[in-house]
Image 1 (tube, rainbow, N blue to C red):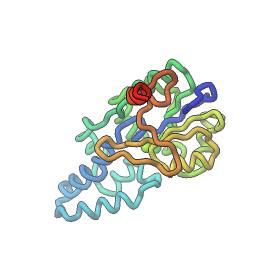
Image 2: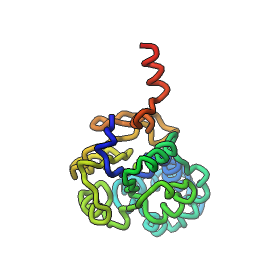
Image 3: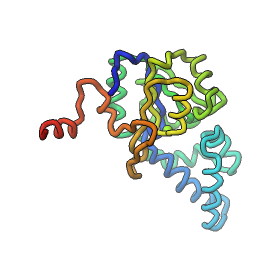
Image 4: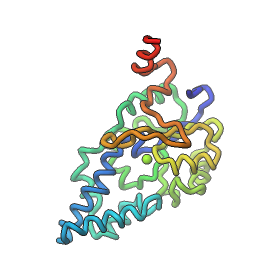
Length: 229
Ligand SMILES: [Mg+2]
């Protein structure tokens, strides 16, 4: 599926791609609304309002900014995240994939909408940094990946040839933005959140396991299918 000889750079999203999105889904939609009403002594029904307010910022830089939400909601978002940090973890075979990339040595760059506070929380808990040549956060750039300006700015700080770049991201709107910019090899993720159902993306191939794009490493189920054929 991927001709690795044609790839110089691998751009990787973090949440929902390398890391299980369950932490973020749970934090933003369950834990934060619940703790917000507790801390502000509001009635439980206000949780719904806060959820709607959070979701209304989706896809904007605010949505990804912990400082923004701490200010807006009058709570310490980082401290609240730490309450459920045991849910932060790598997706199924992400570690194997990163290990393979490290020895295959294309340039590996984390291209994330997570802000620096999110990174400061998640990187030490997951060990991702050992596998990355660079980390570019849209918060540093000033625009999210959904916007074309992000890709131009990324290329300024981390030059890459779009025709020889693979980008993997669980967010179809972001993949669309990368495609518009001209990145040639694009892959989505079938199950970003381990507690939610798999989904297919209409416009992009969605990966089940990273192993399926590694040369010479055939997923067990594929071997089984071929064995039976
Ligand atoms: Mg993501």
